[in-house]
Image (cartoon, rainbow, N blue to C red; front, side, top):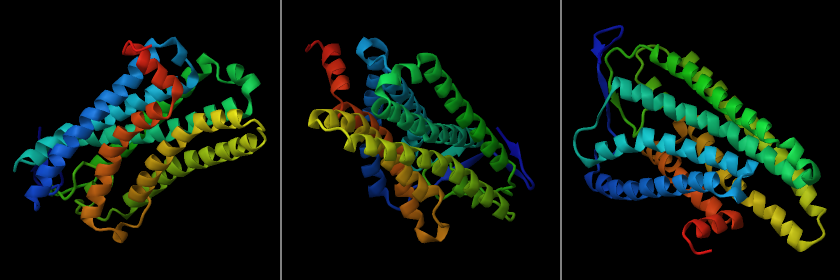
Length: 309
């Protein structure tokens, strides 16, 4: 597919990745294959358990299954192409493939920002309003929250993607990165992209900082409620329902803020690549294991599915 630009045509991009380090590429290929298989196994297990086990038919696991689905979509949009590029000298991605990768990655990232905030509100209702929890987090309301989350992420990503493909590249097609992302595509432009960079920064700030603020406020109230619980067993149960979510929040927001809100001159290109690998490959792998290893209900459902209960 050839896309007309201001000068000439452009039918694809070359993702350089770590082409200057063949041994590193071989090592990363093996590591990423293992992580990708674990990502598929872990997230698909959570989705299957949340659907099949009646004990997990609660708002928390409903939201968690959507989080797992987002991680599956994100990694599947980027990792197979990355593995293909790491395997040999051919490191090309089609223009359509790059735009598709960009849209899916932005969609899943934006949606996950909001979903993690929704999950924090759910934990607030469970800990701080336990007697009214079933009324507050009614199944219909949960479905509406998830629909709103997906719609916001998909629409904001569509706007971002349309804006980025309008930027003239003038035939430049060499991307010194591992994925197709907005910041690296803007570097290919042959015109001033200050307005685009400012727009990206503002959108990223809203999508990252507003939900993060809501999460911190929710956990502030949760901390107050936990301190008032006198029984140690009740306190441990309340903390247990929140600790896994907090770990995922710190992993996701820490890497996303470091990537999208930091000054571009503060890190090297290789550091940006490793950061992209961390939040694009490692974090989606860790999420399901954080929830399953630290969650009694999830471990019980897993044992039941394996016939050990």
